[in-house]
Amino acid sequence: MNRLLVWYGELTTPRQLVHRGLYFLGAGMLWLMIFLVLPGLVLIVVSFATRGAYGQLEWSFTVENYKRLIGFTLFGWTSDYILIVWRSVWVAFVTTAISVFLSYPLSFFICARPERSRYLWLTLVIIPFWTNMVIRTYAWFLILAPELPFAKLASFFKLIPPDTPLYPNAFAVYLGMVSMFLPFVTLPLYASVERLDWTLVEAAQDLYASRVRVFTQAILPQTLPGLSVGVILTFVPAMGMFVVPDLLGGAKYMLVGNLIQQQFGASRDWPFGAAISMGLMILTMISLQLYRRRSKEIEFV
Amino acid sequence: MRRTHPLISAAALLTMGFLYLPLLSVAVFSVNATRYGLVWRGFTLDWYIQLVHNEFILEAAWNTLVLAVASTLVATVFGTVLAIGLDRFPWSKRTNTFLDIVLHVPVVIPDIILAAALVVAFGLLRALSSVFEPGLFNMIIGHITFQIAFVALVVRSRLVSIGREIEEAARDLFASTPYILRRITLPLLLPGIVAGAMLAFTLSLDDFVISFFTAGPESVTLPLFIFAAVRRGVTPQIHALSTLVVLITVILIIGMERFTRK
Image 1 (cartoon, chains in turn brown, blue):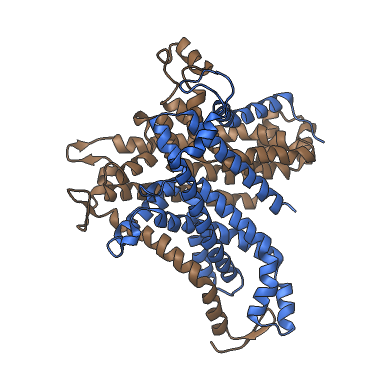
Image 2 (cartoon, rainbow over the protein chains, first blue to last red):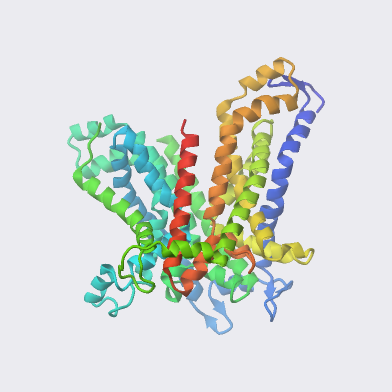
């Protein structure tokens, strides 16, 4: 290890460089080890622990929490928790799909603005992206309030009883989720649309491609990089979202996020909460893995 | 310039309306004179004036500011040093992959998992020291943890884009490592550091989940206050408070844009 090397103009030894490098990494990495990696490992350990009678942790290790998550209880099998997990995945999927559907027109529209006003439009998309999610979620209370036309219309069609708000229900959750995550898709998609090679689109049109084929064969492949970033940025956090379903979904439309929060809040069942978090973590890793495989394919195109 | 089909424009404008309808309605009802219900009874600024006299809100605003400033300061320093350490040294491929994964974890995982992990970790640390009781201190630690990653990623991309030629030239002219750091790397990095710090600050103001899980009764921040108030029932005062928070966000974003787009 004592051979000399020239590292960007400096005559040094590998040992010296590593030594200095660790000096730089030290503080930050130590922090991340103590407050990120270690808590993560502790969470895994706790997910195998047992809840004591008063909500304290007892270190007798079982897989009981995981069995409970997939539905095995003292009184036989129930689908309650599986249903909540499945619903979270489904809500995340639908949210992503609607956001993608709405983002295409929006990003093409912004791209077609003249240079000066384009940044203004883009900033208009960025502002909700950075606005506090509690505010953006509860704001729907106002729009869906019984006094306003939307709820009146719904009660006119006998969808809800008269003089009640249009929440909490599944519809309100979807509204809240899509408005929450739409900018997450639009912004990366816009970056791809901006770089679009329009000559390919024109070539497809010249060759009498239908509108659908122009989209699927000339536009979609070119926007895939931005689209896949947007999809992963939406799908993963949407699965773990808990503010929107908590405020707009009520007890009837619980998602995994609410279930986790419940274990750390009212139920005080940390081991079970940790096990659900691990379940969510596994779902996250599966989605990221799918994304990585897809993005590798994209590079080949 | 390319023209868009009118249908696409219509869809885009409707989508923008959909994004802004909630925020605009909060702003509208924050200046509505009715206390209950959503009937328009004329313009008033009473709710804004009442905010200033509500000591709970003032305290929450103060907590939010302390949390954001303290965590941003620590995270900016740690994140910047970490980024230099990551980018400027010949780590093996293995080490690099590991560091990269650790750095990306807080960015990609749902924040509720980090929150759950912190709750459990603080719960166990409480056995060692009462410092780890739920409260502002824990919240600051939690915020720093995800901010470090974002700051380090922003600063690292700036490090990559400024390259190493100038540092190498300085080295050839016999500059010492501290001198290079102070007179070359840091000044060149400054825009990246400021951008990272502003991002960290905005993330802290924006965060709800980490705060919600780690807060104690004495350390209510504005998002937590709004959440608790909303669950009891919305009032015009909350609309006024929310409108102010949104306005501050807008100012921060415009500042950030000005700074990064040059």
